[in-house]
Amino acid sequence: MHDAASQALRLDAIQGRYDPGLIAIVLAIASLGVVMVASSSIAIAEGLSVGPFYFLTRHLMFLCGGLALAICFMRTELKFVEKHAHLALLLCFVALLLVFLPGLGKTVNGARRWITLGVSNFQVVEAAKLLFIVWLASYLVRYRDQVQYQWRAIFKPVLVVGALAVLLLLQPDFGSAVLMIAVVGSMLMLGGASIPRLMAPVAIVIPVMAAVAWAEPYRVRRLTSFLNPWEDPFRDGFQLTQALIAVGRGEWFGVGLGASVQKLFYLPEAHTDFIMAVIAEELGFVGVLLVVALFALFTWRAFAIGLRAIEMRRWFAGYCAFGVAMWMSLQSFVSMGVNLGLLPTKGFTLPLISSGGSSVLMTCAAIGLLLRVSYEVERAARQVARARGEEGEPELPAADPEPTAAPAPARGLRERVPPTLGGLA
Image (cartoon, rainbow, N blue to C red; front, side):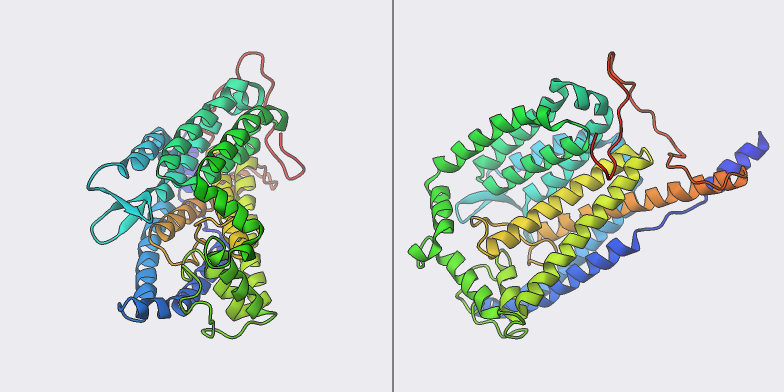
């Protein structure tokens, strides 16, 4: 008995390690973002008479705030997050409803997406994305067997995201609604739902979202101007034509850092939504490839961490990693696609590169959660290795040294097969 207690104490004393590869990728993206915010925002800041480095200083302050949030998540046990995950969904709805409160909600360019926090405005949907991923990860843990075999388990999260999408469309924020729906579909598939079962919700959602898109004249204009921006280059196609001019000027190696012409009051939102076009102009095709490679590496590393967690039967950790990976990869893909003229114009920031407040803060928080997953997975692997080593067994199985109670399979259901690199169950 004493030996068992001593061994447990020794195992508890083992610490994990935050994934160094992920940290290096994030630092590279954030560093590039600081350089490009400084380059793209000087002319805009001078035009607003707020000082040439106003947006750079603001961006650095939000990065510091984001670092603090990331550290908080990195030091929080995932079992604590999972225990209170049911509150995350409630906070999601509360956050999205706050923008409609008089005196608290703020309207910018006809959209009511922000709340006033005194020193700055906060776009609540950025927090809602992370909160929803945490709740959905918890849901997939509790109903992972039912999700694989029962329609009802699939429709529950679809109905929830539908309600959230209604609130987003009232703001209006069509892009974020589509992004959250895409994240739900991806996480359900990674959680074990078969593609044929997902087709029924998809067959309902796509026509509804298409009807919503065509119901608003400005969305129709965005779609039509995207197909041929040069038809009306001074009105509906203005943003995209200016972005394409910037991309074309960059050629292979760019015109040089700081030498962009389009950012001088020609390209709207050059330091936020269209910062990728400035990168293309100043750093050229090589710079664009660098950005694409960094986000591809981030996505690969995040999925690798999530897959390792799933293999060790740490379901909540794995689904959180998958959710963050899908969020960042989809948002960066859309942002880059818009800047390069491959997708209709949508106001998505490029994570950690675009200047912004709420986006930077919540992106850092999501990365902190992802790093916590890597820490606990590494800690679990070391604990298993130590336990097996003390028992004289050199092999390291992919098992959870601290198994959490999982719900028993529903009656009549087969045992669930976790996803692997070769395919998804």
